Length: 415
Figure 1 (cartoon, helix red, strand yellow):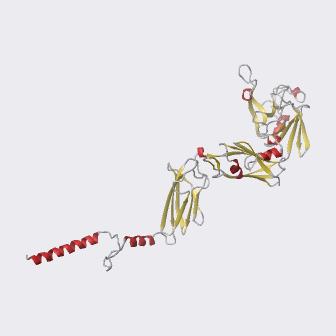
Figure 2: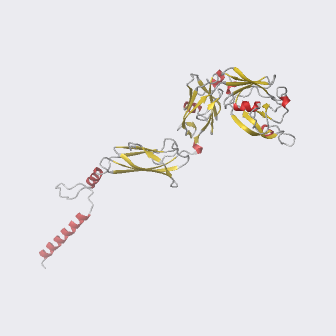
Figure 3: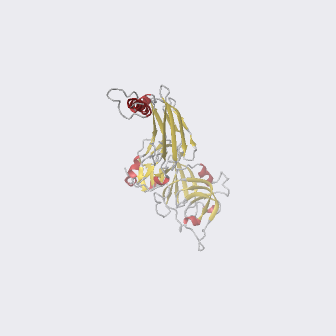
């Protein structure tokens, strides 16, 4: 082979190898000036792929990776320029959370309140008008008990209570930003009365009008505490509306001097009942007291309220006290008494500080004075105790804020 023929053969082989390289390599730059590149650029490929993707835009709240998420308003899924076809929410252990897509298929939310300190995963699929699918995923963790607070409130939603029943809220964490929390709580009445709230301490706030609630009125409590910071790093999680009715106006007056109790409705005496109040050594507190609990029968152990003998045992332990209604946290009750002589009622004050009424063992006789009062009393009814010679009960000992005047009460508001 001549040199010239060898040079032509090498040139042909080089051209062939070069062609292989051009066909197999990815193009990372623009075509040359002569436009002889022959292949689409990656930018053009990406653009073409984007033109074929779904227009549906899915949004999951809270955003992926969130912590301290709300247990009320979290895990909402929405879509723009499309409709949802599937949403699935599970806990970290795979338990599925029920939820519902809206009628127009543009949003989804869980069917029940979420749990605290739980990690949830959400996967969502939507499609646009051309039927092209879009997907979105997120994972978040709800606020932990250590980083959240809850208020336990009374009275219950839907209940009917007496005219003295305050709204009382006890928080499970100490509240340092009382103003922020109080602004998230509203108490209103259709009876037209002004309602003010009073903080007894960092964990308790009660709300009431200046005078007893109006008979037959409706009171509404709204808790809008979700996300409200009550203390450093501690947030509210409640979002709730509660309503309760005020029943007939019943106020009972216990006179330890005459040893009689007058039960009034709308200011008129409907029954007079002989009683036995606290003995001279164990006087009953004076003041306006609100019935907070009712028990057909309950146990009363003196050791739980400081009445013990030399051996440390309770001075009394009665396991079946009938028709008992609590008047204070410290242990003051108005209750039936079957163990005392019938002659003491109306004539002697013999108790350890409670107000006793004649009754029978077993709480099954409807004709006793104690049974009558029990059946005619509501949680929230007022019992005013007078002439015992003891001090007035503390306003925070039970639901007894009525023993604080209106100006003092309002001075305890944080807003």
